[in-house]
Image 1 (cartoon, one colour):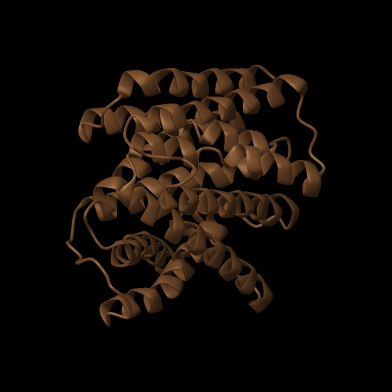
Image 2 (image 1 turned 135 degrees about the horizontal axis):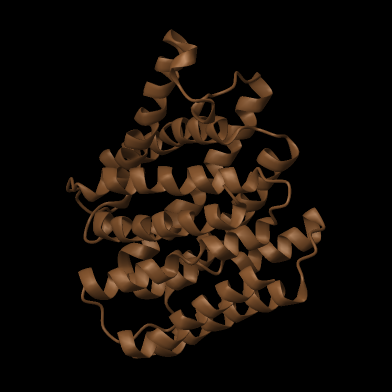
Length: 298
């Protein structure tokens, strides 16, 4: 599959993931929701690993997980820790912010990834591709005006800053993904399998601390959106990792295309969560679409 097509497919599933996330954490405890969601995702890969151990030829090569050294396991555990830190910050923010605002802010990952790719990976996107990313980011800034109508100050609301911090960590994770997949040549299935399993190990002590009431917390309620959140992310990440394995793929552009998920989340926020000011937010969201088109044309 071409890396641009893979990035757009990943964007669709990532948008569904944003909607399931909002449904899971709205008026609900975040840490146990994260733990149970990751358990669901990890169980899928544990089942595939067991099937591979019993009958190696029973799985298609695309799902085959390679054996790893202790050092390689440590590299993937580091990815899980980085993702977990990003999620804790982002999920608490999503709990308290409208998804039609939170999802586009999370989509600002490309600008941070582009900066990192230019400085660290020496990538050189074309002028039109840079214009596409810049247009996308400018559109997100327009959301701050719509946010004011809902009483959300982008400079004073602490959840906005939590979300920005989580977004920056997500950009670091994207650069690390490119290193794992493009430089060290990990298979996409190997990265996805073990980082999902290690996420459970990272979130388990946090969820136990929540259970022991180590801090003031919300109650947890099981919702079927929790496993759906896991399955949507599995699909989004699988095609995303496959895109990054392509030597021609630029990580900054893959992330830009992938953040087209904001369009899916925006529509879902208006349709399913009855979020207000959709008309005021629409020009900014359309700006995201223009940015994606410019990126593809480049």
